[in-house]
Length: 129
Image (cartoon, rainbow, N blue to C red; front, side, top):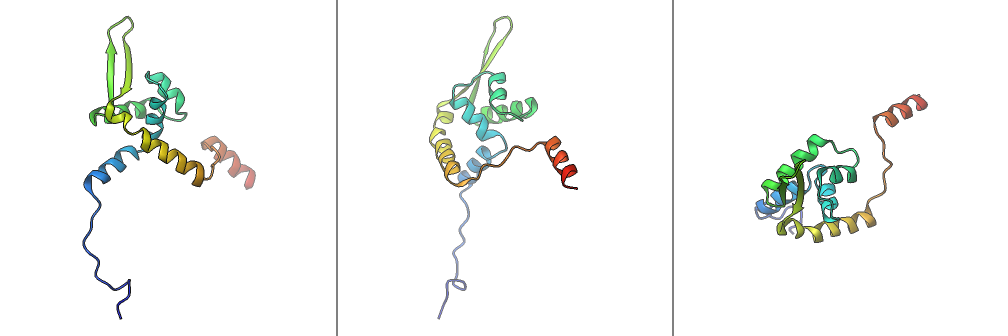
């Protein structure tokens, strides 16, 4: 008698489009950046302020990635000083349902973890030893 563990499984692979999408929006900080932009944040400094701990270098890198994917558009207004804004494209706005679903899932299933930076970790290690 055949059991589920020894029956032949068809060769099924993860869809490359799905894999690319999950890797893209699952990169560190990308979800938080998209969420802040969905709340109307458009300037670099506004996005950075919304996501504590995100370095300027990494924010710049992520925005460039999202721009190259057609999710974000960069708008330069040649005033003095030059004004740069980032806006979600239609493709980026279409992610709102995805981020809302992840947010709802997180509210139901992810335990709140305390924020712990390196200084806090060092203090905790000193106290416990």
